[in-house]
Structure formats: C-alpha cells, structure tokens
Figure 1 (cartoon, rainbow, N blue to C red):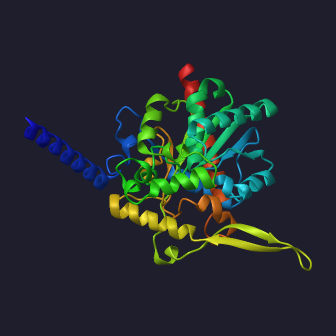
Figure 2 (figure 1 turned 90 degrees about the vertical axis):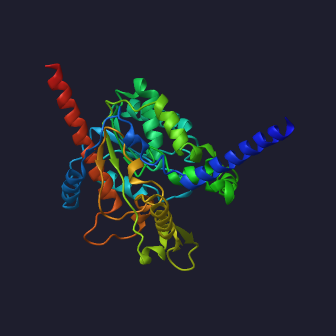
Figure 3 (figure 1 turned 120 degrees about the horizontal axis):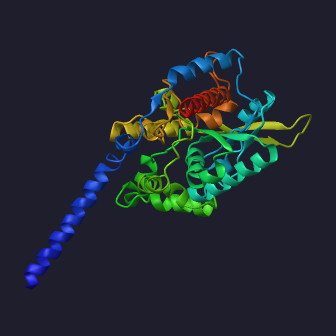
Length: 363
C-alpha cells in the first residue's frame, strides 16, 4: 500500500505543478473581455462618432454643458501623489461658470471604502446646492464611482444624473491580475512583494486597492453589486502608442518651486518615463494576449455593459488624462479638459434620451 500511496501523492504533486504551470502560461487570457461574453448583460452602443462631433464643437468654443448640475471628477490610483490630477480640468470648467469638484479620496484605499466616501461627497454636494451630480471617474476612480452607485443607489438615485468612466478597468485589469493573483507572474519575480511594500509602506495605502482591480475581485463584486441599469453611463477607452519615440519619452508629471534668488521663484519641471513605461506595458499585453490597451487597461475591459462606448482611434496612454494637461497639445488635437467636456456633454445627451424614452413609455 505504501508504494501506491507514494505514487498517488507524487501524481497529485505533479498534476498540481502542471496546473500551476498552465495557469501561469495562460495568465489572464481567459479573463480579458469576460463581461462582453456574459449573454445576460446588455450590449454597448458605439458613441464614438457623436463624441467626435461634440469634441469638434467644443474646440470651436461651442459649449453646451448645463450649469444646472455639479460636476464631480474622481481620480484614480496613486492620485494623492499626483498633484496635477484633474487640476487644469477643474479650472477649465470653472472658467465656463460651472461648479466642479475633485473628489479628495485616498486613492490607495479599497473600492468599497472609496465608494462610501464618494457617496458622502455626492450627498454633501446635493444638500449644499440642491443640484444633481454628474460624475467622471478616471482609472480606478471610475470603478470607485460605479461602486458607489451600485452599493448606494437607493440613497443616490435622485442625486446623480450620470457617470462617465474613462480608461477604467471595470471588468478588471490583466496587469493587476498578473502581478497579484496566485500562480501568476508576481509569484515568480517577487512583484507582489514589491507592490505590497510600495502601496502599504511607501504610499501608506491598502494593497486591497490593487487587488480589487483583479479579474477575480471584479467578477465577485459585479455578481453581487451590478450597476443599476437606469444609470446613464458613457465608457471611454483608448490604446497607447508603442512607437520608438514614445518608448524614449519623458512625461511632465509635476513641478517644484525653488526659493527665489531674484524676482519670482523658479519652477523646475519633474519628469519621468511614464509614457515609455505604459508603452512597454502595452507591448507586453499585445505580445502575450494579443490585446490592445492603454498600458494598464484593455479596451475590452473598459466598457460598462449597456453603456454608450467611446472608442477613439487617437493613441492615448493611461496617464494622458492625468498628466498631459501640463503639456501643450498639437494644434489639431484636443486637450484633456476638452475631452472631459465632450464626454460629459455626451453623457447629458444620453441622460436626456433616457428621460424622453421613459416619458414615452409612461404615456
């Protein structure tokens, strides 16, 4: 019996190694785009053409955003360490006479914690202004915002007019999954431990913030807390350029003011190879999975079922909406503030169409 038991244990161990190897090789291949394969969920509608029409009007100084609502911009992961996040966009909206806020959440907190804080933001804005709120969440900020509506819709349904999620891993992220999920790359190259130290010790955050963006966690959350179908939603996603010039580019992410020696204080730009890193990540995702992405989020995972999807061809990486506001865009290209305005204008149209359709049904 003993040899047979040893054989059984050996076979079990061998099968475990085979399964682990297969899991590592497959990575997130079976998870990418999983939301689009759930037949019970509504399909998305392509709103790219209409978005580009609105964007063209915005660039001609034709502005249609109403002042009857308040605009809440929700930043994503590590936003506490990016002082430029949405700042220019908020100033741009203010110049148009619109009330705009940036949600001051701890971006490295879990989705559930941030959802609660966003809910409180919305309630505070509503009770102070008696105006409904339009949300635009970027990256994890879009996931956090959607979670707030999923978890607290009975309290928020009369206070929220709609949601834009921009470059958000609504279905999950292969980068987060491959780093953190057991049996993935993170186990073999110590990436999980590195991320744990970075998030928990250096950034004073919660590793669950990153874990919440894995496919496993997103599937679990969305099965329990689906986004209410009556919420007007616009999904915006892009893909990064992977040209040689981008792979060597430096991004202006902040500035430092030095004490003045004569006259005004000197401003020193802070640059880092952010675009290059995202281009490299995008290349890896294409090589490993054959999927287009902005460097962190694949196009397939960035669409909310039933939403109006904006899929521009312009090459924009995941950090463009955050940091490109410090740089002048080419004359024929819209900047981040104009893109945000166009997305929210499109969302207003979606909400108006929903209300009209609802009124027609009631008659």
